[in-house]
Image 1 (cartoon, protein in one colour):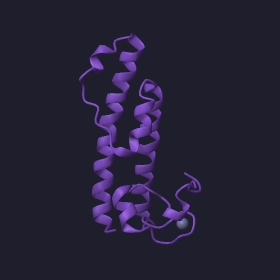
Image 2 (cartoon, protein in one colour):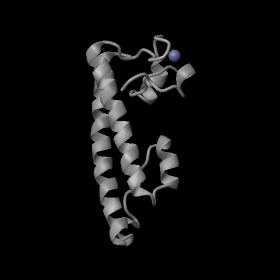
Image 3 (cartoon, protein in one colour):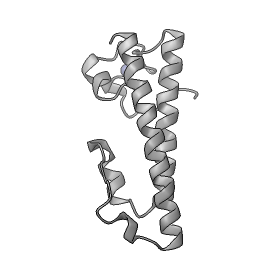
Amino acid sequence: MDPDRARDMLTAELKALDERAEFAAESAAQVASGDLSANEGGMQQHPADYGTDIANRMESDGLVQTIEVQRRRVRDALDRLDQGSYGRCAVCGREIDDERLEARPEVATCREHADAQPVGG
Ligand SMILES: [Zn+2]
């Protein structure tokens, strides 16, 4: 993974997450005020890996938190880019394959350690 390309992707993702966070905060406000009709026919574009969130979309507060966690991951990835450690598994130190980084540029671990949490953070 080219660091410049990774940075572009992460920056774009951070921007998208900011927009999504705004939308989720608005939805949470609507749920809180009982005004659900505004959501009908509205934009509901979710990337595939947000599928589990769709099932929980009534829990807008949870969605806000999920987005916040994802934003932190993206920011951490940008930090790793600055430190020169980007693209290496936080568990075993091996290079993460490009295919995985293309799909999820913010990941801190290789496929083998996908379920492991990075140390610190
Ligand atoms: Zn690993």
